Image (spheres, rainbow, N blue to C red):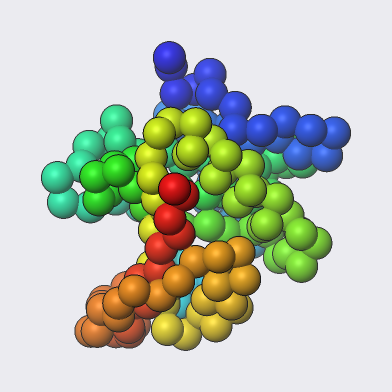
Length: 177
């Protein structure tokens, strides 16, 4: 199945679909600009002009672009209001979420949890047994979000460099068995 044809979920208010570098780079960059608070908190810099390209192109060791998904969340006016980016089978049998961002105007509305519940169902249907996420130490709201929906911390990675920030990554996981 072509990634572009995949829909994660669809309801009266939102729909989620797979995004592509070729078709959606500007949309993603615009969302990143609206989410500059994330970049300022976590990377200690304004949103870089390369933010969207990095979302589409950055990969962990041993993975290819075929393993990577960038899923856009759109409102009923067809405006990109969030995204979740990740890699399947990293590590084997698990999904790794590299980034989940939501437009500041749509935060604290339950959208993040709604996105994740649908994402989790999609992952379970692909026979993967876990989901992992890395949360930067500075991002207390994100840590609390992931913890609230069932993720547990399993290790910390010190001296992690992101943007202009050297920080600690809190590795969290959710078992789906």
